Length: 172
Image 1 (cartoon, rainbow, N blue to C red):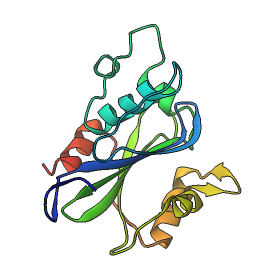
Image 2 (tube, one colour):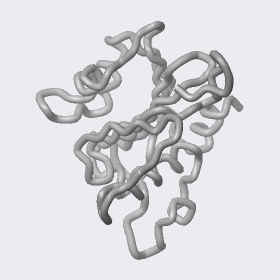
Image 3 (tube, helix red, strand yellow):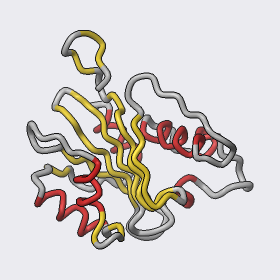
Image 4 (tube, rainbow, N blue to C red):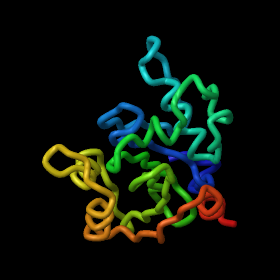
């Protein structure tokens, strides 16, 4: 967890990104807290991860994400190709660990939902997979959210615009 001084939590400090059927990744769990360095050969996924980080902090237009017009798929098309595609951002704020879940149910509109982790409970990667998958297949959003509620998460209402998402993320 990122800290500015002893026991003071940095506002909305991004800690992890979980890709589920997103950006051609069936599953990837990436730690991004503290000083993080990405290295690898061409096509390894460095830019995919960096674009996901920029998206978390509010870059939504393809141009802001370094995606050339007409040459590549739009961010939403590439990252959310299926109805069970998710980007799940784990960050810390004054209330503790929170997940920001970005997904599509149909069409081109991306939706957002925040999930507050159960008080005092740490969720490891094995538990994350258990919540996200059923028999090796990523759950559809309705089933995923029911699983989270059953595990003690508190869920925000569904947000349908990036403006609403930013207002919640930045406490406006």
